[in-house]
Image 1: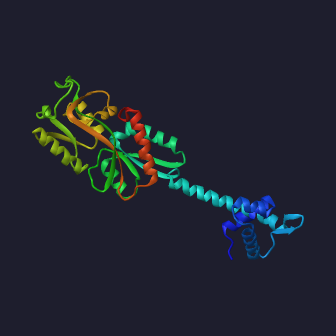
Image 2: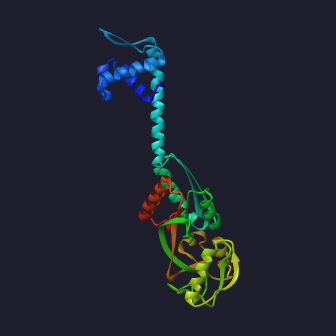
Image 3: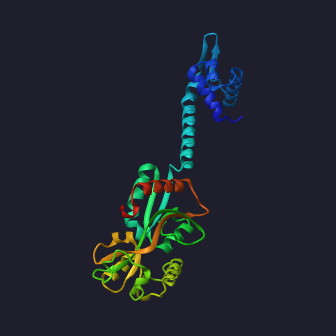
Length: 300
């Protein structure tokens, strides 16, 4: 017979109480069954662990040597079980996050801070990336979850976190800069600066639909590689663009944000449809709780 953890637990219980009767009661088994299990353990070891006579039960020399070792094995087994249970609950392990570069400035600090405070034993890594790298990282298991604009692809799950106005971004002094609100059609005659069509084709197909609905095709005078570059071009007077209101955190001077009627942008948590880990569910719960208590588009 190969001794099992239950045999060690039986042995330790008897050794601690020096009584088969008390140990059996504590273990919720019959005393006869306990005696048989101890006898089987002694047979497997080839040595007596207890001396029993009219004066009571005592550990033998072999029993005294075996007791701390048995306790250590049981403690390690209990620790392994606890570690596994914590991992199942998503309280340990690692979490690899991507933040869309245009949202990281305000979204990353509060989300990372709140998650680390709630789950300090999870090894969390976060970085800001472009949309193409973000989606590829989720698909290739380099990221577990991401905070982004809706990627508009079928193989990623998303959960809406916050919604904010989309604005026309105009250079300071532009004739429309003093308006309280605009329609996209009001910008039909303007020169536009937009990101490269290859930066994320699903988004640009959506932009095409939006412009078509507004009744015009934008006159694009320059393409840029990201939101900071777009803001710089607008500030320089090269053209106008259209961005979520939170992008103003990336540039405070030289540009004016004017809300566009009926136009909003969502930030979502995205994760692979085939990998919904508990730690990601915990992240989503923390982010949702955070979004209900503060304006994440203004956090930072």
